[in-house]
Amino acid sequence: MLTQHQSERIQALRYPLIIGVVLIHAATFNVDILQDNFSAINRFIINYFSHSLGRLSVPFLFMLSSFFLYSKLVGGISSYKTQMSKRIKGLLLPYILWNLIVLGISVAAELVPSLSAMISSDRPRFSDMSFIQLFSTTFGFSSYPISYQFWFIRNLFLLCLISPVFFILKSEVYKVFFLFFLALLWVFNPVLEYSEAIESVTFFYVGFLLSRSNKWFDFIDKNRSILIFFFIITSISDALLRNTFTGLMIHKISILLGCAFLISVSLSIVDSKNYFVKNLLVSLGGASFFVFAAHEPTLTVVRKVLYKTVQFSGDSYTTFIYFCSTFVTVVICTFVYYVLSAISLKYFSYLTGGR
Image (cartoon, rainbow, N blue to C red; front, side, top):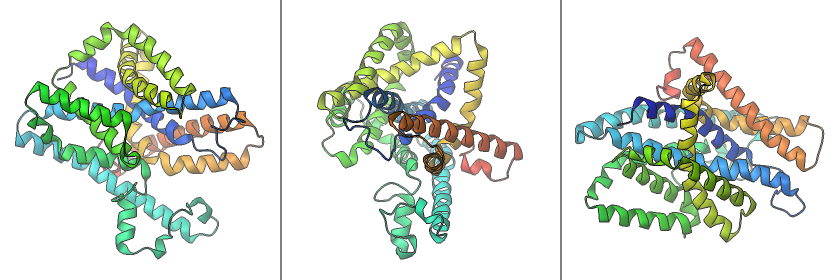
């Protein structure tokens, strides 16, 4: 089990991790930043925050979620039932509700001519879909759900559902072999369309292994300086060499070092004499799920508004849109969360999974 100090360190990371998710999705532009005519410095800045830093969030969250689950799976079938009951409320119910909300917004926007431009033209109209197609599109049975960031919640819930499977691996040799097998799949990724599924399983399994002991906190703390140093080197290289084979390998190494980096940063936050930052991050952690859930389609709307209202152009303009849309989206979602929490709407906790 985690100590109180270790638990505070994890709590302090929740909100920054969700900002990382928003940074990933904010890197959608009306220009290709990988083209040679795009400013190298602006490309590096966007790649660094979105690709090198932002993409730490999802694997780290899978790992942490798994670690917390397996730390509490200690009582056989009864503890499994208890933990799955919590995850039905905390994951499955919000998954259903948020996708239905986004479906309602999308259908309404489709019916209003002035808003229909906000709807992607890459898929059929909802009115032309059969019930099965609509159901699959909404809940992501064959692809992303309609609230596409919820693929993470879908995969996480399914992994929690089959979580006892890993207990079959009794021998340490089998555990290491399976880790090696998953690592190979994750690094070389032979089937691109399953990359997110492979990453989900890999880091969920890593969380399972880490749950067997919390001494890894001590290992990271003792070696934090060298881990931070190597993460800085690999993350910068990752941003510079994106979309090359070498860059892909460095990206994978950077993610592994980045997970250790995040744990190291959490120590600096919690042990800092600046209690304001620590208390602020721990407090904002309560809003993290709502920000995750509501940042799309909020981010898309904010970005479209900025493109129409900000009257200048160039590569710096694209970088400005990137950071400004992220900031405005996070502020709006956080503000709405605290307003709804203050109003104490009867069913609001269903949307946040009781968080």
